[in-house]
Each structure stands twice: as structure tokens, then as C-alpha cells.
Length: 196
Length: 246
Image 1 (spheres, chains in turn blue, yellow):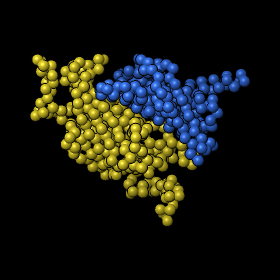
Image 2: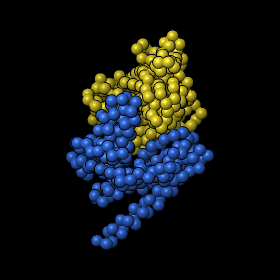
Image 3: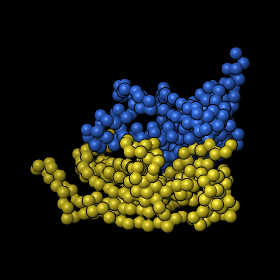
Image 4: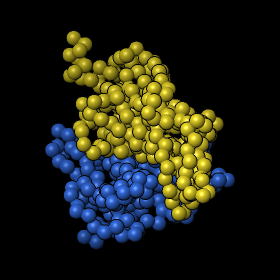
């Protein structure tokens, strides 16, 4: 009766660590980790990288599981594979949007759509939505996943120090921004289905 | 009779308690379990702490070793956390490489250390560009009964406060490090982050310090880490689970 959702995120290393024997659920980072076990301090950097991917996968998977109507498809496994083509900041938010669009494209029944919005907080408290890689070096970066029905918070992942008033401000800004993302979803789907 | 009902309809059984604003183990909705801490129990480690939150038991051991710093941060040491959830703590874990839950917990602890600036990495520097300390923090769960993230954060903080590093001088003639084990000093802990986990029920109720059963029945979990100034270091809400009956 249960339906599983697997998420594999295969991310290519920037310096081209080469290809690894790809088994099911085996990510490229794991290979890099094994090489660097020769000198332990470097092992920490690459080990944490692989673990960061697992953490991101779990966030995306839990968000998808909350909206997908799993009971309609018993004994089914839905695999969402995300391949990063280029990372210019707000990576997790972009992954969430891609996952949602892919699920819609596949015709998977969902109880709501979801979108990812990232915002960065500067040292003087200015809020920047959808930060670039350079803007992400700010004091704090917060990523939220919001649903389309009531703009409820499905998932949040934050980095850095901030106060709770700043959190409320970021959440309000993200909820306003999600309107734009959902309008974009609607327009692109309308364009796609009007052609066929 | 009650045991039969609990097995057949665990969520309904739980809801009966929630209506009276209490939980099966007698706690209020906002009440933590009895917490005990034991510091410095592992003599072979440089710092250690054992934390019990009710039945959940986590032990943290910190070992300090030498390392060469990276070229882009020549005066920064390393703090490397690792959370291990072995099969002895719960039947849901198998032996072998770390499962997803252990990796997510390790990443969470690494984020807390990074965001809260609990230790200034420059304090771990012995000789810039040549020698730094690396602190390997190993957190092992001995009994898993929910709320593992709070217990791990607490154990890590207690163990780091217990760490004593010996004085190290670089001999100019031989360029070797000389360790003076007689002169030890504590680490400079700058902030004290505390984690609080909540379980979300039916999208309306928030329950503090969930046990293993409560985590399984909940719609979602939420962990907030704050330091003593009231700043949030981490808001960890890893999505919601699908409702058990939709």
C-alpha cells in the first residue's frame, strides 16, 4: 500500500573528477571521498560534500512525498533524478521547482504544486530574493518550499545566523514571490498544452 | 483492550490523549523528558559527554589531531562531526555504510557548528600555513527514542566544553612540533547553541521533544537551534510526511 519516492541527485564536480561506476543510488561525490581518504583533513571536505547531497536529497524527497497522492499508486516507486547543469546560486530552490514541473509533466497526481524560493540576508538586514552565488556569501541564506493552495511552508533549510523577526520577514517575502513562480508554472503549462 | 486499540489504530489512540492536552507518557505538550548529562567519562578522548533525553542516549567523543591547513584558509583549523546510528540503538538501522538518517544528522550538526560559530576556527591554529588542530567529534547514539538532533547538539556542546588541548610549540631548529602534555587549556566556546525539536500533528498541534513513536505518527518535524542571544542558527524543517489517512 505504501509508495516510495527515491531521489537521486547526481552532481558533477567542478574540477571534473571523472566518471565513477554508476550503481543505483551511487553519487559521484562518493568516489571522490574514497580517493581523498589518504590524508584525513582533505577527507573531511569531500566527505561532507557527499553528505550535503544526501541532506538535499532528503529535503526534496520529503517535500515531494507531502504533495504526491501516493495512495493512488500502490506498490509504485517514483524516481526523481535531478542533474545540475549550472549552479548560479539558489540551487536548492531551483531543484525544487524542477522536481515539481517534472512531476506535473509525468502526470503524477498531486494534492498541490510546490515551489522553492531562496532569500539572502545581508549583514545590515537587507533582504535579497533569489540570490546569485556571490550574494549567497551573505550573513544568512534561507530556502523555503511553499505549496500552491495556501502558501503553507512545506520545507525550510537555512544557513547562517538571523533573528526571528528577520525569519518572519523572509517568509512573508518568499510567500509573495511564490505567486510569481506559480503564475509562471500556469503560463508555461498553458503554452505547452495549447500547442498540442 | 487499550493495547489492542493502540496496535490497530495508533493515530486515533494518540489523538485521544492529545484532546486532553497530554501524551501517553504523562507529559504536557510543551514538556521535555528528564535530561541527564555525564561529562568526561571517556578518558581516552580529549573531551567527551553522554546525554540522556528520556530514553534517547547519545555519547560524544572529541579527539584532537594535527593537520595541515588548506591553502585558501591557512589559519583555520577543522571541526569534523560525524553522527553514527548503529543497529544497537534501534531495529530500523542495519549495519554497513551510514544510512540516510545518520548522514542528514551529520550534516545538521556540521551546519550548527558552522552557523553558530561555536568555535572560532582561528583558535585552532598552531602555526599559520603549517599546522592546525582538527577536532574529530564522533557522536554515537546508544538508544534511539526520538529527538536525536537535540541530544546530539547538546552532547556536542558539552563535549567541546570538556576538551582540553595541550600547548604546542614549533621548535625552530628541527621544525617539529613539541607537545607539552602538562600544560592544557580549555577551548574558547563563543556561543551555546541549543536545539529544540517539535513534532507537528494534523497541521495544528506542536509537540515538544517527540519520542520515537510520536515522530513516526507525526505529520512533520521541525528543529530550531538558537543561541543565548536569541539568534536562530538553524531552522530545519525537512518537509512534511504524507498524512497517514488522506
